[in-house]
Image 1 (spheres, rainbow, N blue to C red):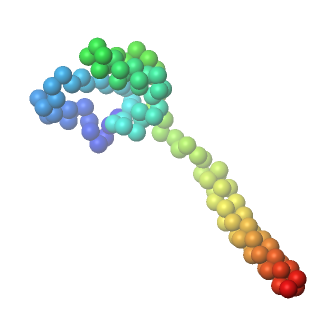
Image 2: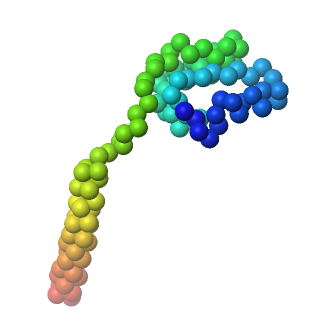
Image 3: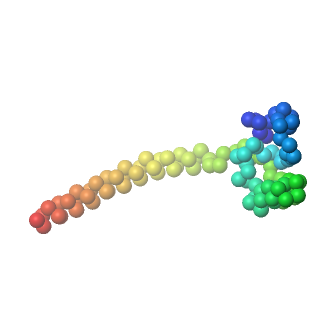
Length: 109
C-alpha cells in the first residue's frame, strides 16, 4: 500500500544495495505505518537483520488496513464549536480578572 515507493521501484535500486533485504509487510506503507508495528516487532526486524542478516517478521501481526477517519465528523464539529465558544470566554474572563486586579491595586495606592 505504499503509493510513493511501490515494491516495483526497489527493483531498480537492488544493484546498488549490497546485502539488502526486501521485506514486504502486507498493507503497510513506506514509513508512516511503522508506528503501527509494535516496538518489539520493529526491534526484532532491525536486530535480526544486523545480527543474523535476516530481517525476520515473526513478531509481525497482520492488521487489515483501515480507511476510516480517526475522528468522526460529529466529534470534530463538537470540538470546533467548543473551541469557538470556550476560548473567547476564557479570554474575556482573563481580561475581566486582570482589570479587577489592576483596579484593586490602584485603589490601594
